[in-house]
Image 1 (cartoon, rainbow, N blue to C red):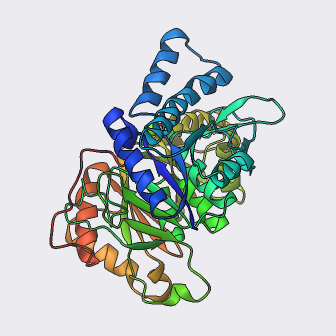
Image 2: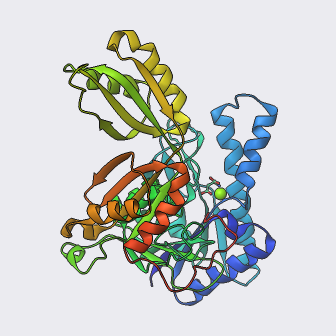
Image 3: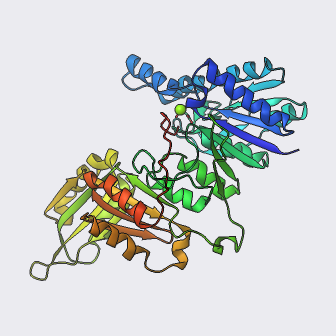
Length: 422
Ligand code: ASP
Ligand code: MG
C-alpha cells in the first residue's frame, strides 16, 4: 500500500461545496488502495481576513497571539474536511499541527520545522483512517506555544510530513494545472511542463514564480521528496517536481525550462565610491548588519579621471528604505557621493538545467531582448539561471519575446482559471 500526502490550498477549500469536492477526491485516492494523509490550508481568504481583524484591534499585535489567531483558520478547514469525508462513509480524523508532531523553533510568524514526530498520524493510518492535518502550524517544545511557518506555509507542512512518513509522493492541489513555462497571465502561449527538477523549481520560485513556495521546494530537495502539482478542479496530469538520481540529469534536458518575472525588487546605486581596497566590504557589511538580503550586484570600473566608482545592487522593495537609511548613516565614514534608489525595475530570469551543457544561452537571451529594443540594466547568472534587470514597464514584453526565442511557445493559449495559483 502506498502512502500519499495530499495538500489542498485555500482556494480548493474555499466553501462547503469545494470541501465536499475535495473530500470526494480524497476518498477516491483512498479507494484506489492508498493510505492518505491530507494537509489543508485555511478556507479562501481566511488568513488575510484574520490579519485584518488583528490589525483592527491592535496596532502591533503580539506575535504569540497572532499565531494563536491564524492557526484557527486551518483548524476550521481540517475539521470540516474530516466531517465531509466521514459523511461519505470513510473514517477520517483531524489533527492540529502540534498533534501531528510538527515541532518548530520558537520564531512566531516564520517558524522553522526542526523535527516531525507523526506518531498519532501513523496510528490513525494503521487503524484505517484518513488523517487530516492543519497546515502552516507547529509547536515549540521549550515555550510550549503554537507557531506558524510563514505565509504559504502549508506547502512546507505537507512536504515535511511526506518526508517523515516516507510517502511515495506529496501531491499539491491548487487552482492551476501545474507548473508553466511562464505565468500564463503574462505569456499567453505558456505551456504546462510535465516534469521539472527541484533544482530548477527552486530557481524559478526564488525568481518570482508563485505556484510553489520556496521553502517547501527547498525541503523537498533536501529530503528527496517528490512533489506533484495539480489542479483540484480537474483530473489533468499536472507537473512532477523530482530529484534526479545520479546521471539522470544529463538525459535530454531542455535548455530552458521556464521564464520567471519579478516586480518585487528595487535597485540601489551608491555613487562616487573612492576606489580603494575595502569599500565594497564596508558597504555590504552595513547592508548585512541591517538584516537585508541582496540579490544582484554590479560594480562599475572607476572613471580614470576621478578614481571614483559606482556599485548597484538589488533588494526587495520592502527593504528599500532600510537600505537607504543604513547607507546614508554611513556616508561620511565610507566617503561616497550619494545613494540613488530606483524601484521601477523588473527582473527576468530564464532557468534550465540544460544550460550546464549548452553554450550560447546568454547570447541568445541578449539577442532576443535587443531585437525587441529592451535595455538591460544588470545581469547575474548561476549554473542553471540567467537573470537580467529591465525597466518594470518592459518586463511583460521581455518575458514574451524570450519565451518565443527559446522555442517555448505552445500552439494553444493556456487556459487560465480565475485563481492566483494559491
Ligand atoms: N493559510 C496560510 C496562508 O494563507 C497558509 C497557506 O495557505 O499555506 O498563508
Ligand atoms: Mg492561503
